[in-house]
Length: 410
Image (cartoon, rainbow, N blue to C red):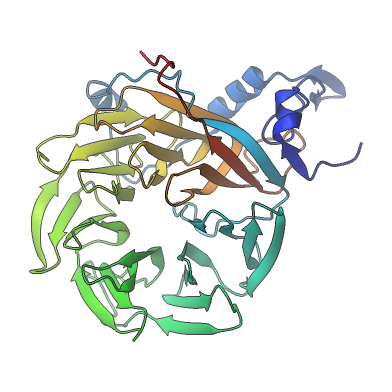
């Protein structure tokens, strides 16, 4: 049987296969020379029994259950459009999953095993823009003009989109050799994002394991801002006022920093384990945090005394979060198998759509502007028999559904 290289909306709607190219009607599992037909629900059950969610801290899931916000799971916000199979996408640190960037509707970038790949969703063509075979890429971001990625040793590379051969190599400062615990400082770059500062200039936001969050001017490549924490910073996000910096890292604490004074203006400790994702809504009213306690928490900036919503994951840690630019939807990616899409327009989340599959997630991203498409990059996993899910990385594309006044939601 010829191996699939893509899955189209027509293939999926006809029932020929799912997003990953799996035909469950013909899927067989061989055990001790006996073959049995494997249903999707049975395979899901097997994965649940094998997978163990990683924790840095000890906590009781019953404590979280009392905070959970009931959410209907019958949302239908995005529909499947296309999957590119065998992308060779890769993860180099199991906790860092921001390895996909969507700067325009015609450009998608993701990390592969030996290169940074540009994917054109219009022509369905891909090309390598940088050979990263000797690097451990931990983070990736892109703007209309630039692509940047950070690596394990604290270096980051910036490429021109129009001419990828034009590259700049930078290194974060080596200020401390040992941390407060006496251990050698790790300079790995955990998260990067291109931002626009309060003056309208493009800067690169960098969160790293040396306890720093920095902003770099893209014209001068000089640091315009530095904040030092007491723990590794895994993710950061700047509010649309250009002043309020959201930081999460190797602790249960979410911090809001006023970058004009570098003082902490809010200290939140509602999670139960380390945090790896956070983001402001584009309108600056809300922010979301997520971590290894298998939940995401949504906050209102006007009253941060407690979370508005506590959104449970199905099986694993929260690794990545994204809002659409129009504030309508929030996507939350688990470590494996699930991406949750929430209707977040009103702040209080009442409904979600769950996209499910059988592989680890490397990154998610909406197209800018109207959030017309949601992209999900996944990698091959050895959790189960690779013959059942025979793909070496997938790039999935989902298209936003448009509703009329006649549609009834509640």
